[in-house]
Length: 124
Image (spheres, rainbow, N blue to C red):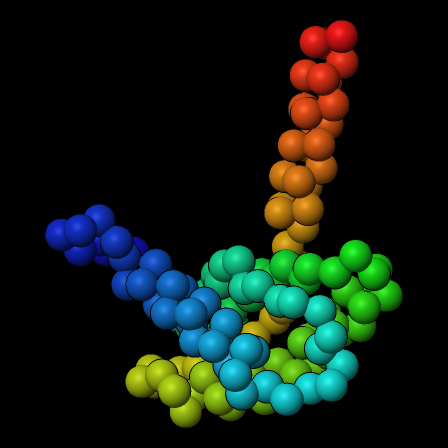
């Protein structure tokens, strides 16, 4: 991909725009009662031809069942989200959306707790 003067490629700009728009659609336009936990779109990775996009989401809930049902509902609403995306963005091709669960935030939180415990144990 070509980079413009600012060092950002068209794909990077589109990924950021898709991320923002999908977040907005989930928060404001998607009325699915199965989505009971807080959802954050962490990143979007489009294929070169814009036919597919992996949408990485984090689902925040202490209840594992709520987390799983929310993610399943999001994945099943992919066509609705794609339709809304087509209405809100001016691109020739709206990619097919594939939702992926991003556990990096949970992993980071777990590492923070481990490091905190280690530092507390070291001070004793």
